[in-house]
Image (cartoon, one colour):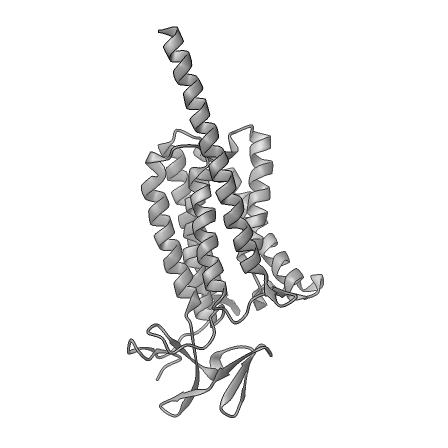
Length: 298
């Protein structure tokens, strides 16, 4: 069997290296390539949406540059703060350690500041960029696949993914069991005389979930009822999916034993639902007032 094996789907990947290629002795990782690819495609999608809605593409180009830098900083800080690492390890980013919610929070703060400076509608702005964010998340999760990280607990379900034990960083084998990151225990399973652990491919679950979410948002963008509707849909859809997927993960960042991402996801969904109701009722009220004015003027 290969480095990665899907036993119930009879799919085997013989060799999967984290490194794509090297330039002048510097390793270029697949994780970085997928992050870059997602960013490029996401920015392109946002540009197209800006053009469709008659907005300045140059403005979104300026924002993209600032948001990418802020997102990386935010994702790194979120990880090291809740993972208990020293702030001095911030620049050891090539060793791994990015948390998507940190990137989203930093991106949101950047967007708030940006629209204040540019004096533009915040809700229309976020509706324009949100599909680009989803695209970035779809591709970013495939970087986790190459790194053999962000996977779930043991499973023998249809989509169970077997990882060759000696290719998983932080995995310690002790007889018939393996301990991952000193916290989660897995039974050791042998295929072809080689040790594996069998896990939920949560990277795949989230990538497919986000792909479905992108399709729904894309289909609704021409028929939205109020400004901010697309970003509300994202927050609810992504929050629900992430809450479920985090319940399967084995490497969550926790506080007092509670996965932080599950807490953030629940808060995100509830806040988005409340905001969506308020925005919908406000738009309905504004339409009613406009209708009354039209009747009086006629």
